[in-house]
Length: 145
Image (tube, rainbow, N blue to C red):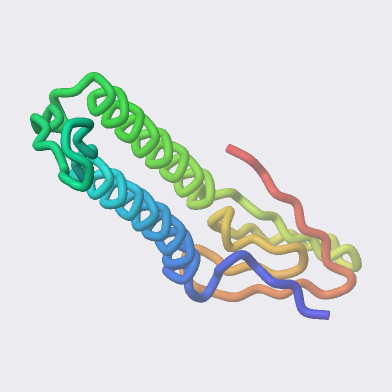
C-alpha cells in the first residue's frame, strides 16, 4: 500500500485549497456588508403620513462610527492572526530535518536532508530532489535540529 506524503509533488495545491477557504470567507463577509448597507439605506415609514417614507439623516459614515471601528479592528486582528498561524505552519513544514536510513542487514547508514512536509512513513523526497523509498529491512531515524 503506497504511503501518501502531504503534497510532495504539488505544494501549491495545498495552498490553493487554503486560499479558496480564505476567499470564501471574504466573500461571505462582503455579502454581509452589502446586505447591511442596503438595509441601512432604506428609510423608516413616516408616522405622520402613512405610505410615505420619512427622509432621515444618513447614518454616520462606516469608519467613523464606534461599531465600524470595532468591526474593522476585529477584522484586522482576525486577518493578522490567520496570517501568523499560516506562516508558522508553513515555516514548520519547510524545516529541514536530517534522516538517517539504516540497513538492518548490513548496518550501513545513509544520511539525507529532508523537508518535514516531504517526509512520509516509508518514503520521502530529499532537498536535492531525490525520491527515497525504504525497503522492508530499512529503518529510518529522524534527527531534529
